[in-house]
Image: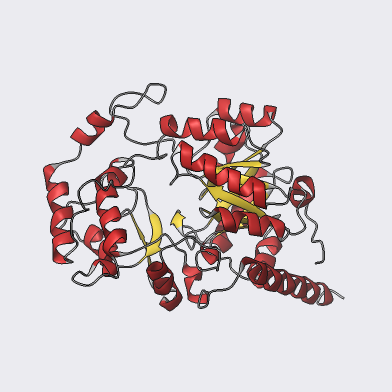
Length: 380
């Protein structure tokens, strides 16, 4: 593999300036082994589960660099506790209206989704959607040989940035606006991820092609910028670099790789979806996030419904329902499969077969090299 040099890739010891966000430890390890940087999405893990995931990565990454992505939102409902005080789950639960709970049960009933069997627990309904619940994750992550700590929502707290720097760990933060990028830098963030509206998961309203040069110009030449949103092939990585980015931050393209841990029925849905089959909706977390368009998102976006709750209440409200949908999808006697969904970007139209990470990386790098050669030849 030809080494593709950009300053941030050189600094982090990467052969290619490609960062891959995934909640699957096997994907993270495989991307790093292939010369990029796998970044583990930690939000869906309890601390104990995160420890197991990091154990796996440490055992399978062959000493290559990897990172961890957490969610420490600047704004969320804390039940009056304040970001420095422990959360009271009971107070948060009390903020969820009976109308919202009835709406969920009606939606599940219309799709004939049964309750969980007695003794079978739903997903943890808070997880790491708040600063308080994420700090233990950060402490664990910084005890491992990670090279990057990324925050997906808002500027990471200054003390977290300082702790990472004390460990020699670079800090990245995702943003959809130049003004927010400047706030990140004020907090000491090293790398800005400019995430366009094409991206899966939480995203703003500005397209990647417009956003990246705006942020590159806003932060200046000394701050590395990665482009995110609508990037799933080498030509798109090359386009991001032509816009001034030092590399690409990818996510959706790994959802359908062979190492993905996504529900097989969700994988099938993604393989069949086109680029117009996503929607930016609050249905998953309470904040706008691009996801597969399904009866689930349509129900939450219907003006006749109660509307999504703010973070973290939306996830708390829907955790049991999501567990039931995944538990019974594909089984006879219900239509739970129709409600299965996933965060995914508009790049989903290119995701039409299951391939191993190594094959995807090899093709991506080869196409990136060809694109760079073609653009170089055009200047002669």
